[in-house]
Length: 204
Ligand code: HEM
Image 1 (tube, rainbow, N blue to C red):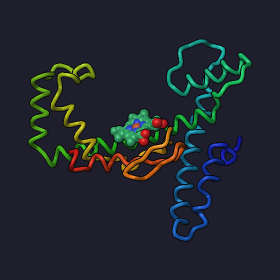
Image 2: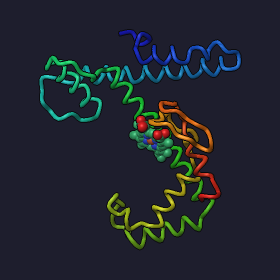
Image 3: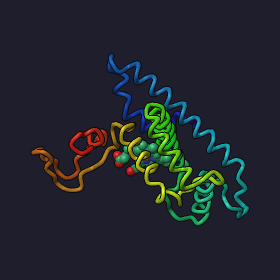
Image 4: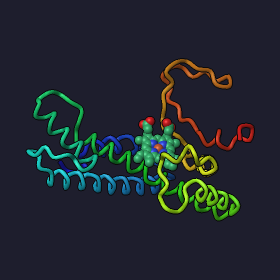
């Protein structure tokens, strides 16, 4: 399949192409489209490369998510029953994990470093807790989290203050609701803004 005929790419194009016709948005749209095409080329290439390497006749354990998914497609195809495991879905899931997981994590960590530089007294307390609870002979694991109160609170505060995802994903109301006098009927598309709560001085 030629990449530009890819159903996901087609869906993206049909949804956003009207922006490309508006004078103000044209450059922004073209840049976004270019980046999105490049990303999908990247995912598509990697999925195809991995697929070519897999020995589907062997029952070896998959070494990662992509292989596992491709094996599942093969298994379902062999069983001959209808299913929703497709390469298009795989590319969608991989791109979701990549985009949702990568930039968010690196930006949050960048904020963590910045805040540690701005608040050396906090950094000192963190070090003190590590020295006291963990020591210097082993790595920290998730099992230590309940004992690391100050560090856990600092991580939460970094996420609140960094507030890197200013706008959330699209959601749908599952029933009629009234928010501050505005009536939102069932099935209204809404985009919550968690950053508004995170910066509300009445709450924090
Ligand atoms: C500090 C790091 C992260 C932050 C700040 C963050 C933030 C968010 C936010 C605000 C949403 C939208 C929630 C909503 O509106 O319902 C979201 C959704 C999502 N995130 Fe993250 N995220 C982070 C890390 C990750 C990682 C590491 C992954 C996966 C590897 C990931 C995967 C996802 C996915 C798949 C969704 C969509 C969930 C859905 O469909 O309901 N995120 N994230």
